[in-house]
Image (cartoon, rainbow over all chains, first blue to last red; front, side, top):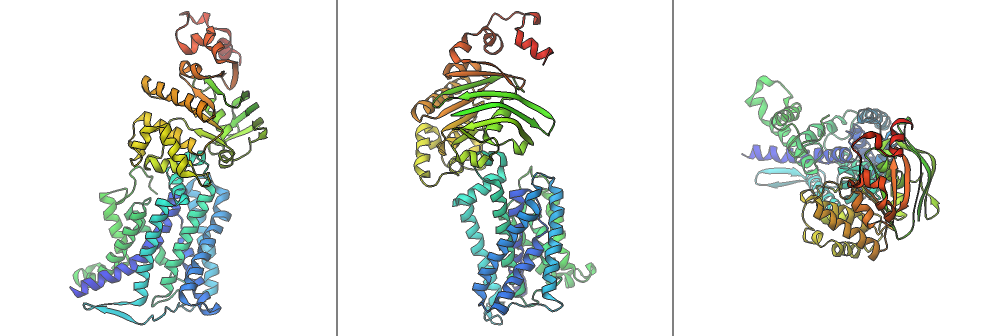
Length: 298
Length: 260
């Protein structure tokens, strides 16, 4: 039982990272109907921003994270403005391919910066752990879950009460009608990318603060958010959070139990498990758990 | 207040939809714009409110003057902020939003005073106040139309473009919408450009009327004169002494078919 609970807890923490990234994907998808494949690069860059600010500039962790989120948001806006805005009105497939290009370009810069060594963001009291009921979790992971929770609450409030949040939802529903109300749709696109960049920076920072740090191939983590959003339903923010957590938990449970329960599936099946889960969900609900039914599939 | 001069609009670089439209809307008036399907009424409204872009349309000639300022190259948000509101054809409320959220989106361009502005709309449309927390998509057609109009009015525009507010509504609801348009015009002093298929309804409240055919204005007269006009009675009001043979159709209708 303790093993199970510990696995779920670990999965929850890892799922929080996926959830943050998935929220970014969904944010951009809702505003522009484009799946942004630039999220991995935004995550890597966000993590490196915090790394640079805490190690080279000398900021403590939390202010460093805050500035990195800001920089991540600016980076997201820059990507939207320079690479995507000129292409507004072109087929979304083209735009999605452009985001792959952006991803590669940004990651080349990031790799140049990183070099071969992992870059680790030091979390204050990072080695200390909370122990309760036989479970154990590091301060860093707890902080990650709290930050994710607060971010989700902030987003919910933003979308419900803020003028810009309402305008974003209106734009997602119908661009022409939104324009007719005087909403500057271009600004909404930029805002969606900014939020996605900020969320990716939070995720990247906590990835870099984890035991493995940020390496040249860490970006692959961000792709796990793709099954998360598809499970959640592509255009649903709660779906993104639940999908992200589901992916984290399934991955963690598979890693713990599959070697003994189903050894014939081979080593490292945990890496495939999210996609297997996605496959199962799609069989039952082709539009995801919370997705709009008529949303076009990609 | 609003004047259109010799406006030409082309879609997809090839389809000429408006061929030199000119019209004038004086401040404080209700102006009706009539015309058959495909005459270019909605295109004209798009050109006025800056929504041509997203339909791949473009103004190739002519001018739109709002209070003497040329606005034909402005984008939609700027035009809305300058005081021109539009209620799109087919209501287009945000179905997943509540009534109140719809109204708040309508006030997007306002700086402050949104609450009072929404209260005014509730006074104008008491039924919306009753339904304020309801999901807009579940309202009846008439209520959705009122919501769409209310949403445009929250921004307190000087002039509002109404695209077929009677579309698909029962006669009694149409009468109600008609009264509301008059009320908006008289009480709030909002100038109205009313595009309608329901010519009787439109002309009965308008001060002036225009008739469009094939991307051109073919008639331009005070509303009472149009109501009396035998062509209009034949083609739009459906109670004229229309002959059963096409040979007896009026001249401009024939010209439209064969010459232009």
